[in-house]
Amino acid sequence: MIKIGITGGIGSGKTLISSVIEHIGYDVFYSDIEAKIILEKDQNVKSEMVQLFGKDIYILNKLNRPLLSNILFSNKSLIEKVNSIVHPIVRLKFDEWSKSKKTPIVFNEAAILFETEAYKNFDASILVVAPQEVRLKRVMLRDGLLKEQIISRINNQWLDEDKINLATYVISNNGTDPLLNQIENVIDQLLIISN
Image (cartoon, rainbow, N blue to C red):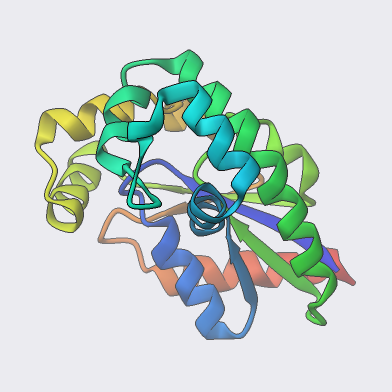
């Protein structure tokens, strides 16, 4: 079995690509969803978050996401601190999950695969890219955020140009290049590697 990381900046469409891969018949682990579960269910993580941000970081036992977003997207050192609390647990969950799978390839969707150097734990990586204007429109529609808020988040992520140098495969999700052909081409190459 080979393990493949899927990543891309906010609004790039990495979740769409992951869902297509699932539809084709491969298992995908969603790191960001798992991280959200850990932040709300793991008592040790919750106490570390309260120590770091104060008791207002949880409201009625639910993570106060707007507060956390406002704090994190203006402070890179705190982003790294939260990542150091949550991501080792996410990695362990992925390892446990992948052991239960029988397919020749498993995928792990993660927003910050390169930033955390987690890509080094995978046999290959897929980077999903899209022009900034396309990403802005997608996120504005999806999340109802203002353009300035999205740009602030994009500015806190690595540039696609920096990630392309580390990625094994790049899928362009610009709204014009056919996605299915690109995904199938990557999977065909991965099947060769997995044998």
